[in-house]
Length: 267
Length: 336
Image (tube, rainbow over all chains, first blue to last red; front, side, top):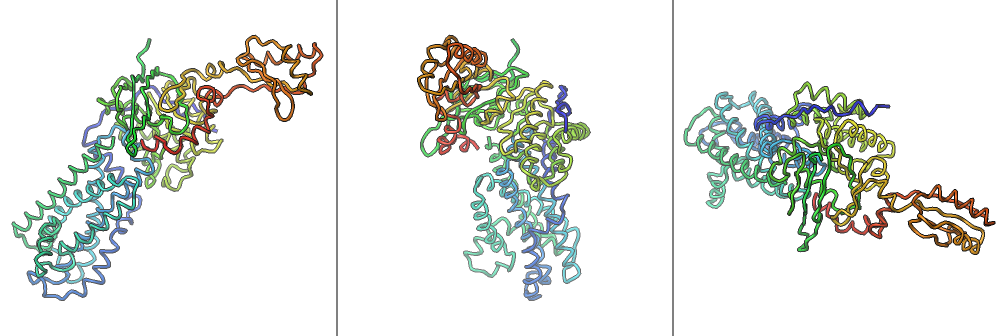
């Protein structure tokens, strides 16, 4: 039997104020731990993108794509975007679980800034996104995908910014849906495929009807995917890349802005 | 007089539920001195948790003020948070995390060094008997293990003031006893503790001071002994016939009784029931007196009052009934 005296609190206080960066690192580290303990979970949200890669990409005819690139060369950036969108859009469900079980409340009482609770979580999503992209690229490089490393790295940097924004929006959805898991999933599933298809992820929208092209032009992911395609092909069209950067940055700014506000309204 | 560690003035919280205003906490005035162990006792929906949530910065008060550890809960949330520990009703430890990881992370959140946190975590893990499970994923732990882990999370930074919201709910009797021991130990070491409970025996066993809350207001605030002392010990004397009981009523000394002797039937036998401030001595004296008068006492029962009796005498409802009837519109749910 243990004695009570062992847990008695010594009167010296351990606590000291922490800075914003330290708070973000605290939240980031906490989020990273389950992933580090079980790295295999990065594959979980990739199952569908990998099926598209294996069972849909072979149906695409070579030589039918802008720039005369191979079908795989054209398709892979879209799959990287799909994997990123699927992974980041569902992270809110972790927060839903934490709100439901009580650990989120514990963090709200801890001296961690509200903004850090969002920033740390959103920033962590870059890690699985990069891991998933690496797996996809590793899988296709032996085939008709030409690896242009500098372009891929810049492309993934843009995708990382987009991932932070999408993850933030997923957390906003979780905060709004608190206690109603079904609502979170209904909204997430409703948005996921239109956003993917309108970005020209599976097929180019260039030859589609005008209304579809208009919707596509309103979709920020379209610009991100266009920039990824250019960069993954080793080309550097300034306008396309800039548009992609702007779209990703826009999503990130909106996501973080709304997300931090939503997290602050928690009390 | 020392500076209070908690001081509230007219602390009020109202919620709008289906176009009706629910007053969860009404004009609460509370003062807690450093080093106290205070139990908030009341049925579900009484406003205990809502009060705790305001004191821990989770809910902004509708009106009134509260200072915790010297800081206003509305204006200086960060300072309040740094000075308190909180164990809520849910699981503080994330279900996808491992227990020790959460402890290390919690220490980090409070600005502790990694070495301090590790050392302190080891002490707590040992003290709460979590050694075998702390490196497992939280979702695989039993309810009792998770609850103990939650409490270690609330204590990792050795807060001067610890709030515990229904810490023992869902624990088996052995774990409850174990937990009470830990809380009493913490209190002895100088930590101020505020806990909520609807277990009477728990408030009774641990707290020096019991604050009885009903319908969002404090209806009593005293030591458990004083609260019960006012009621007196219930003495039941059994007799063979109702006539004997009636005769006994004329013989016993009614001075000092908190409820005058009445003749009744208990367990199918005639009985004389008295509540007396010093019931045990009175009972022994009464038996002698009655024997001397030729009246035979056939049964004797002396029952000390419980906080349930206190609640009943304060509100006219038993604690259990109050919880059941109020469950439909619990303000705790609204607050959560």
